[in-house]
Length: 438
Image 1 (tube, rainbow, N blue to C red):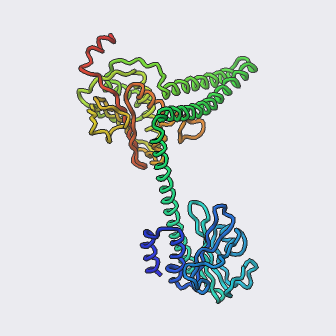
Image 2 (image 1 turned 60 degrees about the horizontal axis):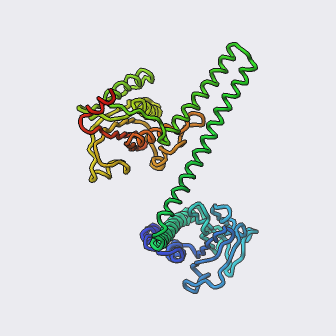
Image 3 (image 1 turned 60 degrees about the vertical axis):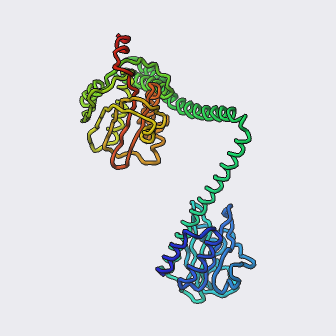
C-alpha cells in the first residue's frame, strides 16, 4: 500500500490531464490496493449529475474506453448521495439498502468517497465487493487518502489551465493593443478614469456612511439637549455632540491628507529634534517606552512640522496596539543615498536622490502577508466597528507623497513591523532655505 501511494505521489507531477489522472487512479492506484473494482465519476459544472469516466476490474474490459457511461443525478443512489452530501459512505449489505442502483455485476457491499477541489464536488470514487461487510475503517482511510491526493492534483491542473488561459488572453490582448497603437493613449486615459471613478465611489460611499453616523450622534444629542434644558445630563449630552463633531472634523482632515490636499506649510526641520520631542510626548502621554537611534549630522528636510508629528503619532499608536502585552517602540533616523542600482531596496515610487529615513519599529503581532498590500487603503482596518476609521495609514501615505517622499512597511507575523518614512533632504546645507523661512 505504501509503495503504491508513494509511486502515486511521485507520478502525480507528470500526469498531464484530468482524463489521464482519472484512469491512472482507477487502474494504477485503487487497482493495486486490494479493491475488487473501481469506478470514478466526474461531476458536471452545474453540480447536478455524475458521469462515469474511468473504471477498473470486471466492469471495464475495454481498456480506456467506457461504453454507455452511467449517468447518476446528484442525490440519487449511494454515489449521488455522496456527491450531494460531500461525505463518504460505506454500505455493509447492498441488498438491504433501498438506495442501491443495481449494476451489471452483482455486489453486496460498497464504499464511496467524494472528490472535492476548489470548494466544489468534482467527482466520486466508488468501489463494490461481491461479499457483505468487505469495507471498514482501513479501506475508508486508504480511499480517502487517494481521494485527497487526486483532489490536490485536480486543483493543480485547474490552476494550470487557468494560467494557460490567462496567458493566451494576455497574448491576444497584446496583439489587439499592438494593432490599436493609435488608440492606446485614449484607452489608457479611459481606464484611468474608470478606476478613478471606482475609487471615488468607494471613498464617497464609506465617507457618507461614517459621516452620517456622526451627524446622527450630533443631531440626537442636540435634540436631547433641547428637551432636557440645563443640568448635568444636558452637559453630558453636549459633550457627546462635541466629541462626535470633533471626530467628523478629524475624518475630513484624514481624507484630505490621503487625497494629498492638506494645506502643508513646509519649514526647514531637524528630524532628530522632532523625534526626540515626540519621544517625551509619547512616554508622558501613553506611558510607552521609546528607544531612539539617531544618526549624527542628519541632513535637514523641508516638511510641515505638524504633519511630521501626526505621522509619528499614527505610527506609534499602531505600534502600541500591536503590542497588547507591552513592549518597546524603536525610532531611528538615518541619511540615505538612493541610486538606480538600489531600486529593489526602496519603495518603487521613490526617485533617486538624498533622503532622510525615519523608521518606527515595534515588536508586536506583525501583519499577515495577505494584508500588507491593503494596510494603506482608505478605510481598511482590522479594528472592531467604532474603534477606528482606517484612515491613519492612508493619511501617512498621502502626506508623505504630498511632501515628495514615500512610506513603506516590512512586517513578519509574531515578530513585529517596521514603517519607514523617506523625506527628501534639502540640497546643500539648507542655509538659504533657513534664511527664507526667517
